[in-house]
Image (tube, rainbow, N blue to C red; front, side, top):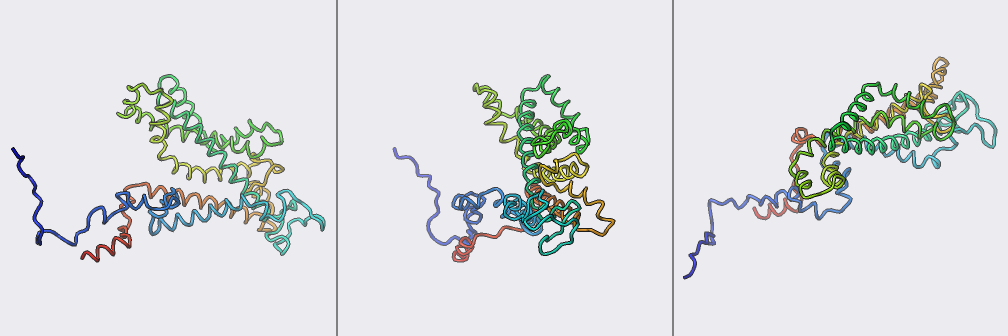
Length: 357
């Protein structure tokens, strides 16, 4: 016996109820369905490029301005030996000793300090110090904060209580005061590498570790009760495998936003340490906060160039990092993304729709 034919496909011919102009959902929005994303070059799928393409209007302007400022200072840090005409602690050249508190001129573009240092060279080398110190501090903070947060949130018990208590105690101290104490303990009044960039980076690391710890621990506590983590545990997966394969990626989704905001705070903390005399040893590296401290006595004499340029450098770098962080925060918020103007269809799709019409 033949099976009954249940084919309900309508016969060919005009159908006035159908809308021939209405596009197919996949064709109308191929980006949402992943078709165009798979055909795009790899560089267009980079996180920064992807966020830049998603931004519009003021968000895009803020993100571009922040990226330009950050890239400018990174290039200054990397190319400091090529850009700076003199060393950060150089006081003389083949023509003799540098003049002290000399006004900006053809030889010294931004003048010289009370100690005879070239201001332009100090600012350039200071960018290298700031970028390297913040990079070391943020990386160390992320590593320690994530590791402690995963262990504390997943294992719980007495270890969790101890780590939470220590983190809360550290978080209760003013960040600059805590950085000063740690810097004194680490350097111990000795000169050398520990009194330079490494000591400053470690002192800032202690300040930021509790922030990453609290965020990761809260996410880990929530994730360990999720069904996919419970399933992995029932199947016999080890604790390190569960933490690395299932919890880590989901618990660190919001960290990029925290990193950008903490980086700007790290710049200010570093400058504050140098300004108060607890930062990097002046013989170890150039530092903008120390230069501002030395420029205080110049203000009364009308010597403005020794303090203006290091101060502007601090403001611009903090502004650039803050703009990037705020832009990423806006783009990650679904409520703010809904305010964006409608995305234009790709040119090929729009042309195909017009042809179909």
